[in-house]
Length: 368
Image 1 (cartoon, rainbow, N blue to C red):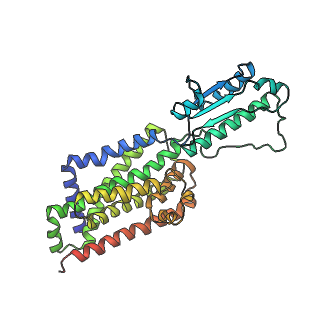
Image 2: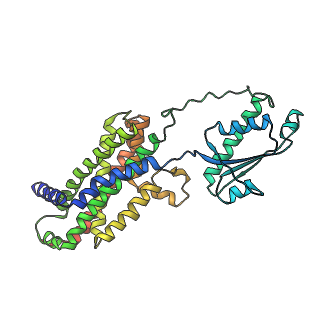
């Protein structure tokens, strides 16, 4: 135990002397939190819409006003021989609505009329949102003007549970915690381990009486303490800036965070043991750590949308389980009943990373 504490103190002393590493540990996680927290939005807003009204009556103007009343579209103007088509082709507008000359006449006569809608479908998800929104507006407009009878057979009374205000930050920011706290602790641990190789000090360790287990636990403890400091900074700033607070049992968040940070540090040590230089270690964390935690953890995209066999990969990604824990702690608040499996998986993956690192380091170490 004394050797582990000594190794931990040595690592923290080296860490404090490197200003670049200090910035990497505490400044970049904060910047990443701000960028991800404000930049990522899943709900489409301010969609540019152009309308070509050949009818120009009160009824057609009422329909146009109803489109903009959703606060989802913003008006765009374009001139030319075919303004709607040109606006779509040139990217000026994402959707164009063309109202025919006989729009109000056919409606007043009880005849069927057609409004043409052109949607830019380069972004399939955005196109789906636009289509559904215009369909809802059209249905509401028809009911408002008595063109179709209201449907009262079934009335769905909907209530948004957990997030009634539809705040995207409640979904995005807890996920950002998982990505940030996976990348930076593992990156710091990987750089610290591979630096021993570059400076040649790892040879002294191999020839010393300290075991691979003691070395990994000493370095791991040091960077676990640093990661806990990062967590306090990131979650504290996130709570203040985005007004997010814990709604459930804080014990699950504390325990899950401790396990997740240990997984992150041991993963970084594993990459450091396997890498020959800092560039390789950084690339390993970027490719294996960052991309998987961003795309295969459920942070942005639902895991059930990932096709087989790639859908098997999230089962061994710790960020996937920690994001479940943070979203439960900050949004749902179900406690142990909802996240016990995530805690178990974080424990198993942490032991796996540590054991693999220990085996690789033991093979490099000279026998005593």
